[in-house]
Amino acid sequence: MGLCNCPQINFSWLDHWLWLLCYNVIMQNLNDYIKYLGLTKPVVVRINSRTHKAWDGYYIPRYNSKGNLAEHRITVYLQDQSRDFDTILAHELIHAWQQENDVSEFHGKDFKRIAKRMEKHFNLTNQMVNIFNNMRLNEQISRMKSMMGLLIEDEQKTYESKPIILIGPQGTGKSTTARALAEKLGIPLVETDILMTDETYENMCKGEPGVEVEITRVAGGGINYSSNKEYEFCVMNKIFDKYRDKKIVLDVGGSHAKWEDEHSSKMKELFNSTPNIFIFNVTGDEDETYEFLKKRREGRGEKISPENEEKFRRIITDLNNFYRGTQKISIVNKEGSDKTTEELVDEIIIKLT
Image 1 (cartoon, one colour):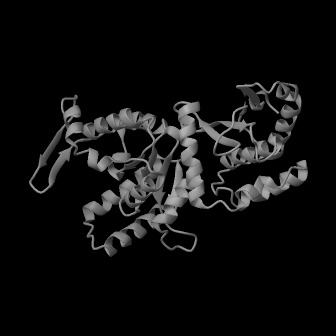
Image 2: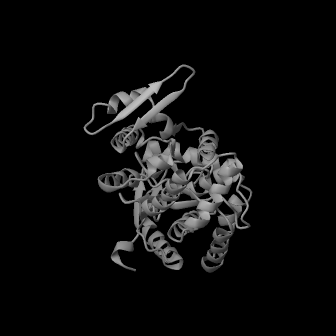
C-alpha cells in the first residue's frame, strides 16, 4: 500500500485509554479492510468516546476544490454501540468503496453483496447489513438531516453543509423536483430565475462595470426583463457569496448555468466549490435528449420556433460540456418511461446519503 493511502486514526475526547493499547490491532484490521475493498483514496478514522443519538458511526466523502473525491472520513462513537467496532468500521468503509466505484444505491444490492463477503472473509457479525435492511426512505432522510446538523457542530463547512444544486434544460422537471426536494428535506429553496429579477440583486449589480439590465415591474406582478451576461454573472456571484455554505436547494435555470469566454473559468470555480451538483438529462446522447424534451414540451402545448429550437439544442450541448464529470440524474427509467417527481427526489437523496 502506497504512502498516500495509509489510513490515519484520530482519538477524540479519549478517556478510554484502553483503545490506545488496541491501536495496532485496529490499524491492522483497517488496513486489511482497505486492501480487501481496493480503496485508493486516503482514509481518516476518528474514534470518539461520546455517544450520538442517531447512530454509532458515519462516513463522509471529502472533496478537493475541483470537486473530485480526495479523502474518506469515518467517525466511530464508542458509547452504547449497537454493533461491535470492527463491524461499524467495515460498514462505513463499504460506503467509501461505493464512492470510489460510483455506486449510488444506498444500502442496496451492491452494498449487501460486499457486506456479506466481508462478514464471511473477516468473521464479522451479520449486523453489518441487517441493521439497515428495514430502513425506509423517510428514516434515511432523518438520518441525513441529523448528520447535516451534526456536521455543523463537529466539522464546520463540510461536504454536507453545502448547497444542493440542480441544473438542467427546460422540460426536464428540474424545478418541480427542486421544490419537492426542498420540502422533503425541510430546507430553503432558492431559484436563480426569480433572483435575476429581484430588486435587491438588481440594485447590487446595476452599478457594476459592464452590467446592462432593464427590469420593469408592472401591475399584477408582471415583469419585463432584459439583461446581458455581465448582469447574470454578477447575480450568480452574489448568490454564491450568500449561500456558498448554506443548506439549501439551488435551482439554476439552464441559461444561467452555461457560460462562455471570460466567464467560463470563473463560473467553474464557483460551481466547483460545492460537490452537490446534479445535472438533469435523458441519456448521454444529446440528440435523443433534445427529441425527448422537445416532444415533452410540445405535449404541454408549447410551440418552439426554429430560432428557439437551435438555442435549446445549444443549451443541452453546452450544459453537457460545461459540467462533464458531474453527477447525472436521468429523468427516464431503464424501460424508457418518465420517472415521477418522487422517484427523482428519492434518487437525489440516496446519492447524497
